[in-house]
Image (cartoon, helix red, strand yellow):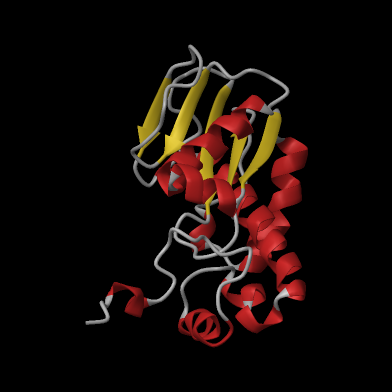
Length: 199
């Protein structure tokens, strides 16, 4: 059973990101403020849920949230500022976009930059411990998946509709055969053999 609240503040926002480990596409973050009485039997870390359950939960979260927002940091910016900074930047931008300013921020993971004067707490595996972070993980994941399915239409050889940009064997084989696209992160090791030196 996920905990309702960490801080005791009623306007506590949970934030999480999706896509850090991908070779292509954006890092996407969401921020969600849930009512303290909100619960749902399926609500959990997005990685523990089927795609169908995530998609079923998304409108329920959006309809019931006091406030929510989703933010994209595109691959070019990921390359410029590095993926950790991109993740934190995406979370900041999602909080920026909330229609209500939160009183406290809880963050999935162990890295965050102070946001304005609002106190925060990082929580390792927070998406499997707190409802608002779990809700944020579901929104970040589903919005990112939708985007990857859309750009899959343009570049079907990379199977982004299935792998969502993660480094699967078929994704890496496609990079080997067809090269990198405008959606690939140029600072990432796209192929294992990039480590090998030609002597």
